Image (tube, rainbow, N blue to C red; front, side):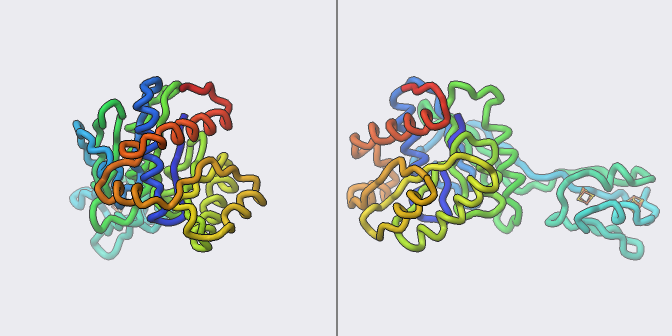
Length: 292
Ligand code: SF4
Ligand code: SF4
């Protein structure tokens, strides 16, 4: 089962939920657990999991490279590019990597065979484990504009083709933009983490719009820091038929553990059962056998 943990904005406790859910399940030892940090601009699940990273590989996108000794400056490559990512100006061929989608059309259509493809490195994938948890994260290079190709390759690399009987937890980037959509795509369930405040509600609405209405995925909510706001999130969820699967109260002990990089299930054992119950609820909702 693939569960994406998402939130309409940063700082709601999304990574906290992803990490603690994974740790609670792994401690039970009945199911292989994977945690994949798809927040490639700012991955921080590793701060709590302290994984041992065993593999690292550069990732990016193939972009055209033009051999000017073969090029006749006919302009065919620019004509076929749907994204205006290549232009022929006087006796030069300009490639704009930030616009290129790596479709390969220019190379295919070059009559002189002057275009080859090279990897434009955008970031790195890191694979390892945190105890029994299989861990993977992507990290985007500073200044890079596109996170989607990295997330796509991270998921392809880290999610086993046959993942039946495994729990794959994806920690999505915050927000509702393309990287979030890419993270959620193909998930069995999306868990939205929100705070019970007007700002939290505003961003939750947007995130639900993406997950449920655009991608057609089932959605449930975790309310974090309950007690700081109002009843708006409760009312919205009731109105929309969205289940609230867990409530984590505002608790100084959780905040202190967080500030030291310690997952709450390590210091407050009662949360182990709470996160297992969360998993069981999700599994039942997607019609999967409930283990443990
Ligand atoms: S299609 Fe090939 S030959 Fe024509 S301008 Fe582009 S690179 Fe040069
Ligand atoms: S690979 Fe595709 S998007 Fe990139 S420059 Fe060539 S035709 Fe354009």
